[in-house]
Amino acid sequence: MSNQSFENIDAGRNIDWGRASVDYDRFRPGPPESFYQRLLAFGIGLRGQRILDLGTGTGLLARRFASQGSIVSGIDYASGQIDMATAAGQRDGLQIAFRQSGAEDLPFDDDAFDVVTANQCWLYFDLKKTIPEVVRVLDAGGLLVVSYFSFLPRLDRIVRASESLVLKHNPDWSGADWDGTLAVEPGWSRQALELVGFFVYDEQIPFTRESWRGRMRALRGISASLSEEQVAAFDAEHDALLADIAPEEFDILHRIHTHIFRPK
Image 1 (cartoon, rainbow, N blue to C red):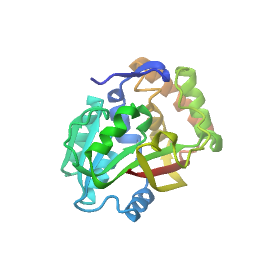
Image 2 (image 1 turned 90 degrees about the vertical axis):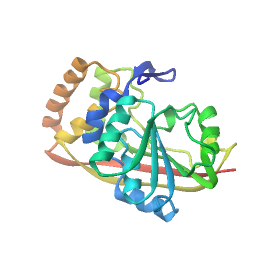
Image 3 (image 1 turned 30 degrees about the vertical axis):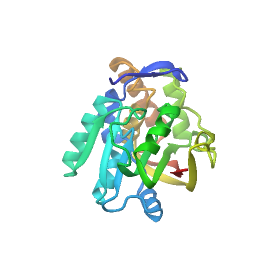
Image 4 (image 1 turned 120 degrees about the vertical axis):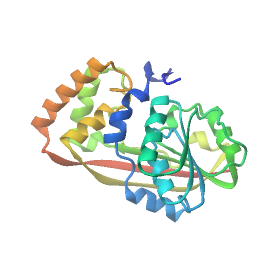
């Protein structure tokens, strides 16, 4: 139950995030400290708060909320991601209930959570099924947080060059060349959800050549989609590219954008 294919994503390629779990855990950073401070201003991430993290991946958000004293559960479709998240949580000495599950049929009781979060994963869900499930498991007054943490190829030559190389090795990857625009109130939210908070800002995130190579290997279009031999070929060419265009240490501009909703 690790492979997924999406008709409108990457030409329907099978995607197995579990194959990217090692690089994902080691090299793919979660949102920066500033993100969590902004959430705290909205009362999200409090001690004792019951939080469910959808599409948890290696548990980056889940682990951070647990470290703040929240009572956290995390789900992901990919068994490899759940295995890595569980190991990372144990490594950090945290108590988090990780389970393998899709977001469309949540294995939790009604009114079980105060907050549901979804970072960098909302586009993968069947929202006609996921939104009613989120509403069901949220307690009265509960909040849904949908967030993204994305680099900006149109503003960064290193990102632009790396994405071009990804497309050379996987022309089906549809994640390239994001223009940085977003809707303040997404159309999918208007029927069942009320927008109660929104923030967007940019922040420089530090990388080395090694960590940026790992970050790009952890893309959906590379490790989650290609064979080991294809990933190795991409990585070797990417290593040579970075030696030509990037210093040993550099920053990559990211855009953090977050919607906070309450069920109507």
